[in-house]
Structures are given as C-alpha cells and as structure tokens.
Length: 331
Image (cartoon, rainbow, N blue to C red; front, side, top):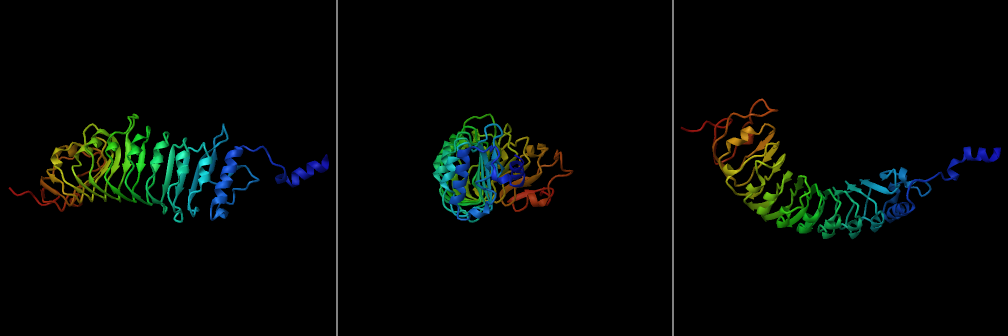
C-alpha cells in the first residue's frame, strides 16, 4: 500500500481524476483541432486532460457541456465542420484570424443554442448565408471586417430576439431589405451597422418602424430619403449616415432625447437645422458638414456635458449656413 501511495504522489498524471467535460463535446473539440492546418497552436487541448480547463473553452458548471469557444488569431484555413457537433454552444467567437478563409459553413446554422456569434477581422468571403436565420436564440451577430459579398439576406429580420447586427467593412451590394423594417417586437432596441460596404438604393420607409439604439449606414451609396431614421419618440443614441447620397429636408426631422452622436456629413441634405437640436442635452458629437443646408445655426444649446455649442468643424461646407460659429448671417 505504501508503494502504491508513493506512486500516486510521484506520478499523478497517470491516473485520470474525475473529468467534468462532456465526452461528446471533448471528442468534437479534438476533431475540430485535428481538422485545423495549424493544430499546434492549441497545445492545451490535450486528450489526456479535462477539456473544461482548455484554453478558450468554457463549460456550463451544472451540465458540463461546452458552452463557449473563442478563437483569437490562431485559426488558418476554413472553419471545420466539426463545430456543428458542439450542440450546446451559446457563445462562438472567431476574431482577428487573418488566415481564416472560405465561406461561413452550414455547420454554423446547426448551432441552435447560439446567443452570440462573431466572425470578424478575418478573410472570409462568399455571401452571408440564409441559414443564419435558423439561429432563433441569437441576440448578437457580428460579421464585420471580412470580404463577404452579395446582398443582405432578408431572412435575418426573422431572428426573434436579435439585439445587434454588425455587417460593416465587407463588400456587400444591393439595398437594405424591406424586411428590416419588420423585425419581431422583442421589447428591445436594435443596433445595426452596415457601414463601409457597397450598398445602394433608397432605404425602405419601413425602417421608421424600428427603434434603433444605434444605426450606422455610412460609406455606402444610399440615396433618397433618410428622415425616417429620426423621431422624437425613438431611443437612438448614435445615428451615422455620412458619405452617401441622401437627399431630404433636414428642417422636418425631430431629434431623439438620448442622442449622443449625429453625423449626416457628405450628403445632399438640404433645409435648415431645426432649433429642437439645441434641446439635446446629451449630444456630444455633431457633424452636418458637406451638405446643402441653409439658414442660421440655432443658438441656446442646453448641452449637459459641454460648456458651449459646437465649433465650425461641425457646420462648414454647406450651401448657406450662417451664424456662430460660422460667419454672421447677412441682414
């Protein structure tokens, strides 16, 4: 007995302790690793150890299923199909993997428990797949900084509890789907970022129905009316539509009380700046430059976090804006 006890003390690794990790999840993780072209970058994924202790892997403390996987900067090649076997994943993140290529695989659409999906700062290409709409528990979707092309799937608007969609910094073309004005009423606001793409056309009037928390449509080729994005009863904090071809009467818009950032620069927006803007006590960033605005810049700002109004960098390069901080209006 003494010899056996001494062996345990000297060579503890030869006797596996109670392992938390679900065996099927462990097998799926090892298959995932072995499918990579550079599996050596995950050295802690040792088949002789508990996968709940592996780097970038997290397990549920009650069920022991793998619920979270984060791959940062190490993945090359394509996303292995074995990802579909981790059926209890709720959080999946591939971030800053410049050698990650190929398309978003159908295996992703089988992860029915996903709450958070991010595949960003990689070199994925191909279209945004329609099967992402199968992920009915998804609240956060981030596919930014890739080389995705084609149109935006209208089916994304069927995600019942989606909270944030970021498709920015890709090569997407076509219009904003009309269905994006009809997201299910999940009792929350929506953050939408479609900036830095090649999207075009007029945005659908139905977007007036959506209570955006943040919306960024900048650096596309949108045209026509964008006034439906404004509204006194909306909860929008950030509204950025710069560097497009929007053309509408700015004097008719009404501003949201929570508004912190407003950028409508580099468009063809005309009319006056409504005096109501001075009542936006939270406003910190304002850019209306390079438009066709006219009239006197409103005064009497009631800003909560700024001692004064905005300087000329917020207003210059318009057709005939005048007044502080620009040149005085002519009598």
